Amino acid sequence: EQALKEKPKQYKDVERQWKDLQRNIKKLQPQPDTTVIQSHMTQLQAILSRMQTLANAITDDPESQAQDIQDESRNYDDVSREFFDAINDINQTVNNASQLENIKRNLKDKTRNVKEWERELKRLSKDAPEQVQTLSAQIEAAKAILTQIENAINAGDSETANSLDRDFWDYNTEIQDLLNEARNVDQIKNQSKEFTRIIKEKTQQIKDMERECKRNKCEGAEAGAILEQLKALLAQMTDMANNLTADFAQEDFWDLNSQFDELSRNFWDANQV
Image (cartoon, rainbow, N blue to C red; front, side, top):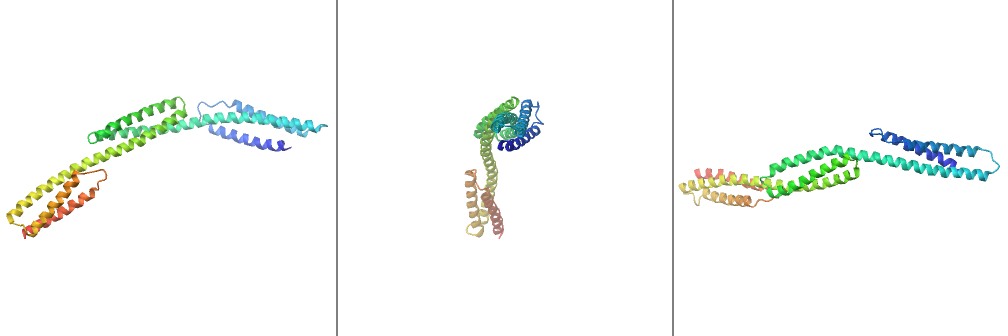
C-alpha cells in the first residue's frame, strides 16, 4: 500500500526532471540522444500500471499479491536509478557546454586585456626597463594560456578550459602588480624631470636675486632675509627631487614651490623699498 502511494509521487519528479532537461538542451548542437531516457520513462509508466492492476485484482492469495507488488516496486527503483543516471549524464553534457560557452565569451575580454597590457608595456619600456623585462615574459605566458584555452574549447574539454582560465587570472594578478610597479617607476621619472626643470628655474631666479641684492646692498635688510629663506626652500625642494620614491607626496613639493613664488614676490617688493 505504501509503495502504491509513493511511486506515483516519485514519477512526478521524473516528469519534472524530463521537462527541465528538455528546456536545458534546446540550444545544444548537436542535440543529445534522449532515447534511453524516454525508454526508461515508458518502463516506469508500465510498472506503475502493473502495480495498480495487481492492487485492483481480486485474489485468494493476498500475500502473493503483496509480494508481486513489492517486486514491481523494486523494478521501479532499478529503472528509476537508470533514468536518473542517464539524466545526470546529459546534464553533465549541458553543464560542460554552458561552461565552455561562458569561457569562450570571456575569451574576447581576456584577449583585449592582453592587447592593453602590450600597449602599456611599449609605453613603459623606456622608463622601467627592469620591470618591463619581467612583465614581457608574464604577458607572453598569459598569451600562451589563451591559446591553450581556445584549444580546450575546440576540443570540448571544459575541465581543462576551466583550469587554464584560473591560471590566466593568476597571471592577470601578477601582471597588474608588475604594471603598477612599472607605472610608479615611470611616474617617479616623469616627476623627477619636471622637478629638475623647476629647480633649474628657481636656481636661476636665486642668482638673479643675489645680483640684485648685491647691487642694492640688501644684506641685513628685509630683502636679504627673504633671500636666505628662498635659498633654504630651494635646498628642501632639491633634496625632495633627489630622493623621489613611489609613496612620495608630491603635494609637499608643490607647497614649497608655492611658498617660493610668494617669497620671491616679497623679495622684489622689499628690494624696491
